Image (cartoon, rainbow, N blue to C red):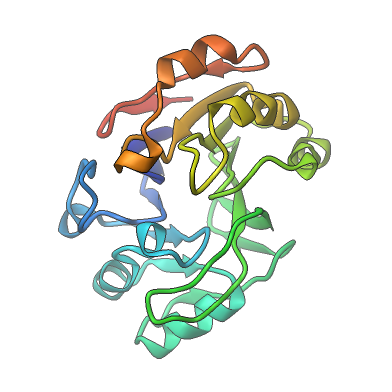
Length: 223
């Protein structure tokens, strides 16, 4: 599986003909490594409704007919926006797709869509191409982060916010890495805007529980 970091909290996971786009904030993202028009996902997964995660989901989904997975209230709103291929789990729910599955897990944050609908934020546990990737979403540090590994047995890569201000910072991220216990951690949600400027290399040095892979927007990591 290839993991391409597209800036902020947006990633593309790909293997063969399957391309999973997570939190497609590209238009208006000063760190975006691609434009919305360049993306041709087969699936789009959303952690929550804030504009820096919801992003271009409607335009991309309508153009590609990618399967969109979002928490039920947000999925219903997307359907009202004309997105036809939508799955609507709630926290703890699992959606299967060809070659894998995705499950929504708790994240401690807030969530409101660009249209003002309040909903519940989530993390994403994605099993795909024989690997397990955990996108924590936007979250603070909380002890239940350790439960994902207890269920899955092994997490190959955790995609982890470290920006602070809106989410946990690198200090809490070090503890989160211990709780999650992934083989590798890829930091995200930092340096996009002034309030979330952080030193990812220092975070890498401080984390002892996992190998930290720092990606610049546009770079790809293979697992």
